[in-house]
Length: 260
Image 1: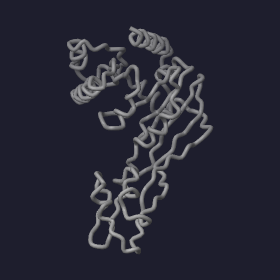
Image 2 (image 1 turned 30 degrees about the vertical axis):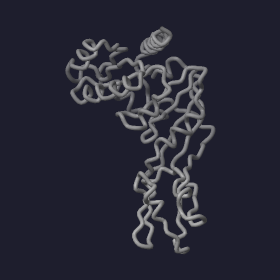
Image 3 (image 1 turned 90 degrees about the vertical axis):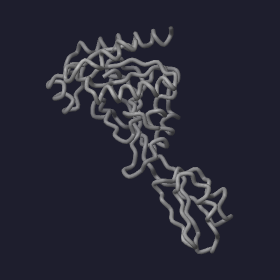
Image 4 (image 1 turned 90 degrees about the horizontal axis):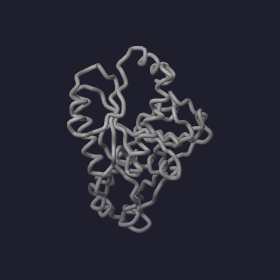
């Protein structure tokens, strides 16, 4: 909604495990960049001892039982350690696909990037790291961040000037909000809150924000009509065009806060 309101921005969908921004922005994808990592394979027929690889790996991706090497590719972080400490010439590497970055454009004048993790892979940071290479550091960049407080969330906000936390007025929403706020405070990131589906629960989220001096940027009402628009891939500003102005003013207010 914010990108559609302001236009002339770069939009980065860092929620690589479940990217859904394309449903609403409907980008014209011009290029797909494949993301790969290095993973080792072991020439066990050489009779070499690979136990140093197992000892080196902090993620337990390699186990050596007698003369047998057991490799768990889903745990491998592609650090290159096996090649470094393993027996010379007996460890090789393959390029393994973990996902892709889709690049394109969307109306109005949005430079669009979306990370898409390969099913079964857990290499979220590898996708996001490749997306970092395309960041425009001279203009407005809007990053769609994964929920929660995982490594992928932290990676997404590490270079942000301001973070917007979207929550719901429920006990579950308040709990997640508090956890996210703790992370952002540790990172030294300024932030504000949007209350989504306002009216569905209680007022504890609003009370918490006011008592903690946290700015509530806006409240989006809980309406069936809005949900119906979302289900068709239509945005809030298509439901009610007055929201376009509200999001534009929100961006101006955030930019002012950043400057001060």
